[in-house]
Image (tube, rainbow, N blue to C red; front, side, top):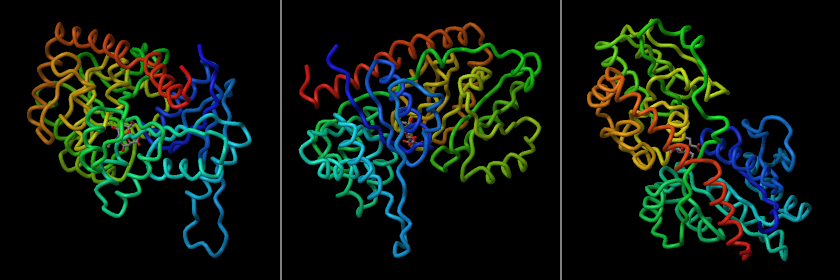
Length: 378
Ligand code: GMT
């Protein structure tokens, strides 16, 4: 193997999939002997216990009284440059173009002759939402253009980035991954019996309850399914739409069939009790939760949005329908849950696909190849 690298990683440490992927990637790279420096405003929530080769540098925000808005981005850029110089980093791998890639660009200027390289990973919302804002387009374009390598988590996100920003810079496709040592079907019969009896099925949805997740559709799908077979709905996570969803469930008289589990840490354990994962999003550059479910042997029923079709193999590891078509999604769920032979096939296909296409070893090696390429090391 080429020499181990010293890598700075910046992500939103408390935010969903992108924070999880960035943190897990750092942990796996550290296991492979690279030196990893997280540069974030708080400890990444999945960092866990002390691990060899992992360091954490906290970005302190200046609250000088003349600042109406504390300049987090500038503090981050300064911290990146300071850590890069002090630790002699080879590269900064940032997750999200805005503001992280811009901060990395500034840090690179500050670090001067150090030969510091930058790699940016696009996760979706930065392009699908921010790039719709004309005032931010030039900034995102600059961030992408100035990175030594840019990666995106799906083919669809690459297409959308090119279309919205009119850029021709190369973008590497690097799918998200799960650690197969953590995500596998867990023993869960006693946990399951806390929610369902006998033949009852469990439908699950996990998200940050943003409007883009269409949690209202989750409830509609569940209502249609539960008219045809005994089932419970488990909702995991919290966010802006939570109260609206609580009200909807109440007004549809479904309160006895729905459980709110709030935010959960051991996601693999929670997912393992589900029979089906629901992901009917409006936009989803990848849909990490569908991969987490797949790795635990749980098929996903969702929408044909963004990168979901690259992840969920329709008719093999789940079913996809047009955004908003809750009738079709409910029909798919009922037919799959009523056919135990087909369900067993789907479950097996889920485990195979997650372990082969989206396994940690494969994707970590892809990132390493990109790092060595930008460093000019063969
Ligand atoms: O989906 C979100 O609201 C959170 C966001 C994030 O930053 O974690 O998710 C984006 O990145 C994830 C990791 O790459 C992807 O799995 C999600 O599909 C993507 N979300 C959207 O594109 C809406």
